[in-house]
Length: 97
Image (cartoon, rainbow, N blue to C red; front, side, top):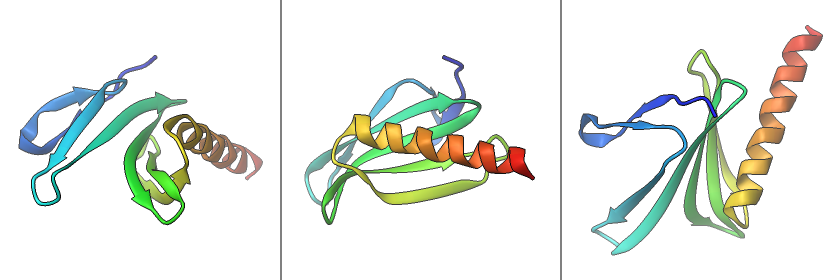
């Protein structure tokens, strides 16, 4: 897996492929953020409840343009699979142009 550096709050650099655990002091809840690189794009999956979904995700292309999907999936694996599907679709659309 290719690693990409992600800058977290406080200026710390976290390489892709690691899980980040975030504690919300206001609500007293813990969230997990998973960062992965796929075909040069960055996928950020966040464990958060939104209607009938338990995960959201962001996909960021190599130029830095991001898209946020709030209803990413019921579980982390499904959210990652959806993100990869969207990336494959974006790449295919560019190839058709």
